[in-house]
Structures are given as C-alpha cells and as structure tokens.
Length: 534
Ligand code: G4P
Image 1 (cartoon, rainbow, N blue to C red):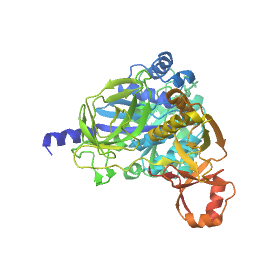
Image 2: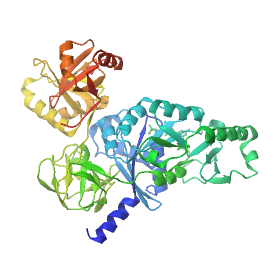
Image 3: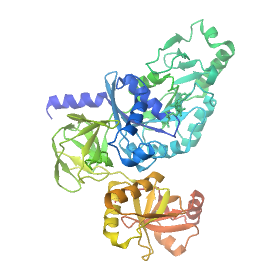
C-alpha cells in the first residue's frame, strides 16, 4: 500500500464516529438530533430540523403517501463535524413508520445512543431495538432525557437498564434534582457541577456554568436539602456503582449513562464530548475472506437499505451503502459480489434530510446513497480488488401477518411482479402457507406501515388493487433444528407453519406465551428470531 493512501485511510478512520439513535416515540429523538446538529454547526439554529419537516410537507417532490400522512418513511444520514471528528448519524424512522428499515439501519451503525424519557424509563420500541444492538454487540450510550420535567428516581432507571437489558451501567454524570428543582448535572470524571439555567431555551448552544464540587458556594446554589440528597446519592453511586470499563463499553456490555434535557440543550455537549472519546471508530468487518480492517486499501461496502421513489418524477431508487474499507471515489468502478457484474458509481449522494448533495469521496463508517436502477438488493456487497462478500443482513422476526389478495385474476402477472420486486427491495417479508391450496402470499412485517406501503405501491407502480386479510399471529420463529420432532407432534395449538421465501420453515405463534409453551413441550426444537438472508 502506498504510504500516502495508508496515512489517508488511517486518518479518516481515526476521525470517524457513526451511530444511530434508538428510542421510543416521543422520547425526544428529533429534539436531540436537532441539538447534536447544532453543535456540529450543520444547522445554525435549532428548529431547523422541524422546519425542514414542515417544509417537506409543502414541497411536491416527495412520496405522495408521505405528504398525505405527513410522516417520514425514509431514514436519512446526517453528517456533521465536531471537534475535528466526522460524525455520521444514521437516522432511523420514527414511530408510526417503525419497520424493518429501523433494524437494518442498526446493521450499518457502529454505536447506538439509547434515548430514554426520564419519566417513562424503558419502553417497548427501545427494548426491541436494543435486542438488535445486542445481537451485534454494539456499544450503547444512554441519554436520559427530559430531566427538566418530573422524572423517576435515577437509581431506579439505572436498575431497570441493568435488570431488564442485562447491561451494566456507568453514570458519567448525575442529575441534581429533577423537574422544577432540576439544578444541573455533576460530571463525575472532572468533579464539576454544570448548572442548569432555566432561561436557556436551547435554540442556541447553551451557556454552561461550571462549578467545582469543592466550591463553597455550592450549598447555596443547590439549596440545602438538594445538596445533602445529592451528596448522599454520590456516595451511594461511588460505593455500589461499577467502575467505568471502556472495553466493556465497546463490547456492548456496559452503557455509559448521561442525564440531560435535549429541549433546553442541557447536557448535550457534555454527552457529545464523552461520546467522541468512548465510541467505537469504524472497525473490522467479517467477510467471506475473513476479517477486513477499515484501512484495507481496496474499497468495499454493503447495501443496508433501498429507498424507492424519493423523487417520483424520476422514479429512481437509492441504495444506501455503508462503506467498510478503503476509499470511495466518485465515478469509481466496483464489482458487485452477488451478480459478478461491474458497476460504475457515477451519481453518489450524501444525504442531509432529503437534500441530496453529490459526494466526491467517502471512507469507512460513511454512508453513501447510490442511484440504483434495480442493480442492488439489501445485503449486497460491492468491492474493488480481491473478491469479498459481507455477511448480509438478516431477516428480523416480523410481528404482523396478513394474506395479500389479488381480487382481479387478469392482473396476476403485475401482482406477482410487484410482490417479488417489493420483497427484493426489502419493503416487506413474504411467506407462504405450507398448504399448496393457499397460494396467496402472506405479508410479514415489523410495522403496520409496511403493509400500507406495499399496497400503495402495488397500486401506484403496478396498477394492482389488493386486499389484506390479517392473520392472528404476532411472533415468528425460524426452525433451526428439531423440525422432525415437530412434524411428529402434529398440529400445534394456536400455531401455524409457513415457509419463507427460501422455503425455510417458520412457525407463527399467537403470542410469546404460545411460543414458550411449544418450546417447553419440544425441548429438541431450536428456534431463531432472525434468519440470514437466503
Ligand atoms: P421523538 O422524535 O422522539 O418522537 O420526540 P420529539 O423530539 O418530537 O419530542 C417529543 C416531545 O418531547 C416534544 O414535545 C418535545 O418538545 C419534547 N421534549 C423533547 N426533549 C425534551 C426535554 O428535554 N424536556 C422537555 N420538557 N420536553 C422535551 P411536543 O409538545 O410534542 O412538541 P413541540 O411542540 O415541543 O415541538
């Protein structure tokens, strides 16, 4: 490798940090994103992200359905500079639009920020997303938000994370009071108190008044009772809390916890500074030729998301590629591992919200958007040099199931084509009944929106009107081992067997309880909530 390229790649990896935020609706993801961008100078006034959202509704070049519903279906990549680092925030779709894309985005992330509402603690969507992070051993940074509002006891919140998620916690800072009496946070490493000023509205970078723990004014500043409570809590924290262990953090076993208030922009900068320090840089990826380092001189990456119809006038598709190694350059010619073809990457895009900006180069940890005239599928690897292929992105357990009916037999061809293409694109999973007589596809999704998108697109792009017949199941498990035993057991109560697109057996259960029951009755049965892409 030329030393120049070597130095270039090493420097690029050193500066890069990439993460996604996992949270439940309303925890404050939009607000936190906005504030993070503010520090990065990517926007100059908070509110811009929301303003963009409003603007988006007004502009015409967006998917019709998004406009009708005023929701955001696409996840985007926000890139900003901070303290000489380049940060890539892989934005995951919000709540109504919860879909497999959210899971897949985590496959491209190196770190996750778990955002929690101080009053609510862990919520269902956070738990689900956490499971995906855990599967990949992603380092998780916890931000406990809305401390300016009455919240739960911070010890109780830490306990919940430890007990429910099995993650050790390390509080990097500690809140002093909450709600009306929120006075600020104590930064344990520097032994300094950052005072909260209620007047700060958070539209600009917050002024941070910092006082040393030993400062005699503290008792007055904090009010006596709070001061004593804080001292007690601190003793307890130092006494029973685990020591910070960065190896544990970076292997996803310990989460550094930050308390703050995104809305008032309090604690965000503190968080960002520690995050840069503790987060994983773009690292090694497993591939068909073994582990490859981000500084490997050949370019490679994998497609983690496909987005169709971002601009209906062009009917284009964008393939989002996570760069894993080497340096991407505009117009470069790469190999496509699955098809063996070569592809020229001529119109690469960097995405900020839905503004597209052409990019000239990218490195490991970056995400590029490629125009995809049907060339790419989820999980595809592109590379230069020696052939290599990344592991691909698994199918995640769907939770909603419905037969998709085509009431008009003359449209069979279009129906079939549409369903196949949408499946290939990763819009939805398709399963089939084992009963040959039932030939209609079963749509299997993580979020309701996926059904709506499929029906909408079948209508608008393929001219097929469809009907959905929901099925009463909510858990899917791939059968890894023990299928024979199950066949002997005959029909299982409240359970149905289907086949996925690759003919692999999948069991659908009414609920978790049914699933556990079947497992208990059939100890030789090994089930999996995820399946590799076939
Ligand atoms: P989301 O993307 O996770 O769904 O959440 P979002 O940022 O939209 O925030 C949800 C609500 O919580 C918003 O209020 C937002 O202002 C509020 N919020 C976010 N962070 C904080 C915080 O640190 N403290 C307090 N007190 N509130 C916070 P909203 O009334 O739904 O919207 P808006 O009218 O304020 O825009």
